[in-house]
Image (cartoon, rainbow, N blue to C red; front, side, top):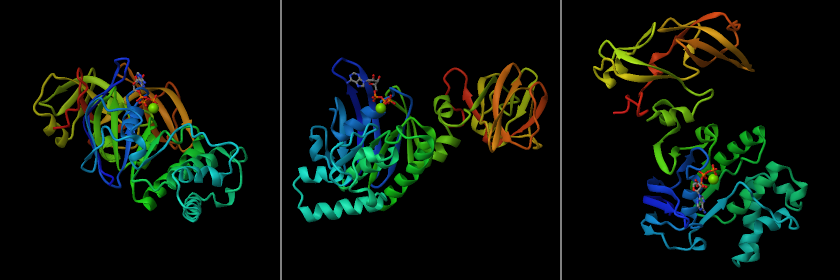
Length: 361
Ligand SMILES: Nc1ncnc2c1ncn2[C@@H]1O[C@H](COP(=O)(O)OP(=O)(O)OP(=O)(O)O)[C@@H](O)[C@H]1O
Ligand SMILES: [Mg+2]
């Protein structure tokens, strides 16, 4: 095992609140799937159902072809890592990692070799005799990972395991987790509300909103071909910009006030010959070039925010403020006018009222 399949799975909590409706998802053996979405969308609920910490109240959950709905948690061969990874304060690192195996009655020699292996892959071998209070946050998180690792489970379930760490450590640990996935060759299901974490870790991302899956796809698919404005807005920093307007010239142009942008034939073919349809044009912050020669946005600079390697520009265009990421070499000052060429091949077009992408056919 570990192919995990959810078929129209629902979760109604005892107080009557429906956290998940008809969720269907198939996770392949050895795949790294990230559940991504805002607070309260049902990520932890989904993970807890897979782990057996909560009961499925509708639909079916399978591991390979075995129905798991009523199989108790301890018989599921999954290991879970939580955000709050309480370690036993009076036990050494070694004992913290070994504890679960001891409880399950594994022989002493086997425990020792498994703990040593886990410690080696997490690079905490020199720390095995220390107690948790003698460790940094990142080292403690590794011990928590080690505890899950020694179980050698068929699937790892991780619920925001890095959110207690500072920004730099989070990035370092992301790389560790990715490496772990390569060496362990098992299925990982990972919950986060951090889009950057999802983009770097996932084979596939599942974007959720209020208990409903919005889109499932590779990081590139989710970023480049969002199905609706919710998905488009959830990924990207600064977030994607929107301009409300109408389609003209049989779907070949986007018009808003004095602004008229030609859509590439590829895009307008997908949209169809539409005139006067209310649409929302989406332009990612990085998809403009101050020196380009394509379709141009003219506007007044309302803010300049240097962010080290780049700068964020706030630009007033046709009554809306858009935020772009441009290189530092552009000398920009508030109040000045600027002309930015837009990479229209990467533009998104959504229906104004439903928010659904018109490029998804
Ligand atoms: N035991 C419970 N009883 C009733 N409602 C619950 C229970 N646990 C969670 N919920 C509700 O179910 C919804 C989904 O919760 P869940 O914990 O799965 O969200 P999440 O996506 O993990 O959010 P976060 O990012 O904040 O951890 C929320 O609206 C939450 O209030
Ligand atoms: Mg949660």
